[in-house]
Image (cartoon, rainbow, N blue to C red; front, top):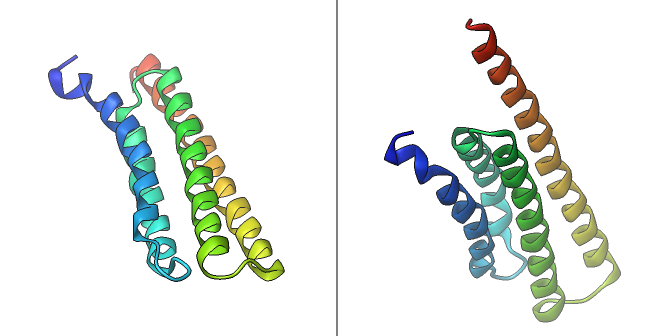
Amino acid sequence: MCMKQKWLFPLACAANLALLSICLLYRGGAPLEMALMPPLHILLFLLNMRASKRWWHVIVLGVLHIAVTFCVLQQSSWLYFRYIVDDVEGRAIAWLECVIGVGLTTVLLIVSLVWFAMKQRKIRTGD
């Protein structure tokens, strides 16, 4: 394992945790934050796949991605309720946003598990 590969897993963990800093971009309902989330999820998914060399890497990075996404969306919702308005519609949108975000990252975890299984099968069969 070369030096670059050795540091890729911790770097991917740090990148997933760095997603929490997106809450610093919060301004008036978080339009910039929500616009950045889909591309960031795709980039993190690709980084996680590149950094995963073992099954536990795939699982740890996938679960970390889900947990951080949940935390970011909860923090964003809290900021909205605290500094904009705390209303029923806002709570419904925050709940829906959280369900969609966690659902998306769960689907990405499932895709990464299937992708890793196919990669492992390809390595074993020598194709």
